Length: 269
Ligand code: NAP
Image 1 (cartoon, protein in one colour):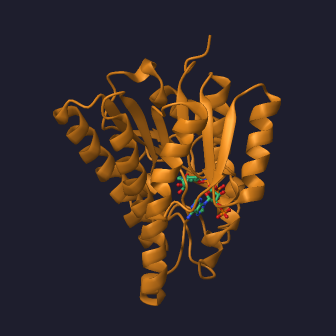
Image 2 (image 1 turned 45 degrees about the vertical axis):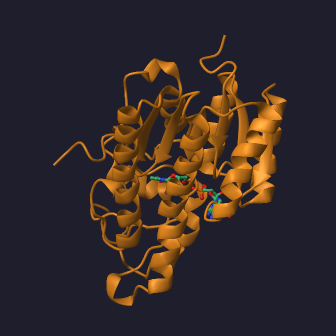
């Protein structure tokens, strides 16, 4: 018996990092997983892993900023696997850079991928789950709880995810729609994101204020060792376990809250 037997879960950004780990963990607990990503090759690896472990999975190439595609995602998930009752809004990018040099185009891209997508996904899910009920898990960040030099746009986007989540939770509950909405705030997690758009950070600009000068700001091991009192970055599966919990009925009275998984990074002064 899995925690999520009979459930259908839609998850974005499932072709890499936290999304892949979460897709695999949801499937392991019995959910049929509708996995999407813009990265087709990565998505196929995730799907193969789930299938090889005996799980049920369907995939769709999805750019989460494409409004029209969101209805297709929900409809196709329902047609192939059954009515979705779990949505994990996970896809995200990090565009770093000092404010004086930051372009409006980069700002808009950051907001589109990290914020517009969460609105579009949540709206599509609420429309689908209004009577059936469900759980929506939005992936924010510790950067949505406090500022970080060189990451102003990313922080703004993740802060928006945090409060949108709370507003959506209150709105659903007040309306009598049995849908819970929570946000997850990872610290430094060892995924490929550190080698991607964050590479746009200008030389010498620390990603996290606590990282001493000279540390390799693109190396999750170094960042995690410095930023977390536990002395290491988190693993994607350590975030996935929290996502599974929030998706399941084990968290049935937990709603509209921010859940930090950061190895005590933000616990100290
Ligand atoms: P990741 O390994 O880069 O995975 C993110 C996935 O999302 C990638 O497959 C990426 O594809 C995809 N994606 C990017 N833009 C997309 C779009 N427009 N539409 C659909 N998919 C898109 O990153 P991760 O570390 O697992 O991050 C997952 C989430 O956790 C993000 O929201 C991130 O902000 C958040 N987070 C991560 C950390 C961390 O330390 N890793 C910490 C806090 C929060 P491409 O490879 O083609 O870009």
